[in-house]
Length: 158
Image (tube, rainbow, N blue to C red; front, side, top):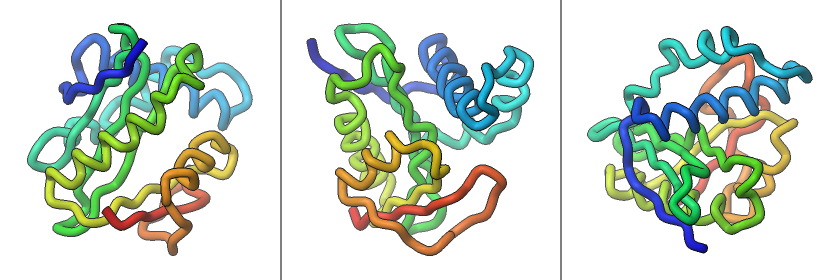
């Protein structure tokens, strides 16, 4: 079984389903209860995902043995920095090496867009994500943005 990654618009059936699963996962963990379909719809509405296409960004769908299993995006913040966003691997596919491979491909995509540094923000409760970033050379940095769901910021030179 192998992972493959392809750039896709955020509204393809696979990309849209993965984005819904991502939002359901992070919102449900934050609220400590299952997110409703209406809450997921509200969270995805006008979330800026349309910027995850060249020249401002890129969105990748990861497939494991042909099945849509993960996703992630990069968004150019300026001429030097890209932000890592919406990195997600469905629970059934965790432990297969997909998250690290996805992260590497997203870093490649950021370089292709001209970025020299990757930054991201996340929450303290997303311990798996924080461990992934640490394993792949990301270190804590000062906050570069603000928001209600941001607890810690990371960066890495590309």
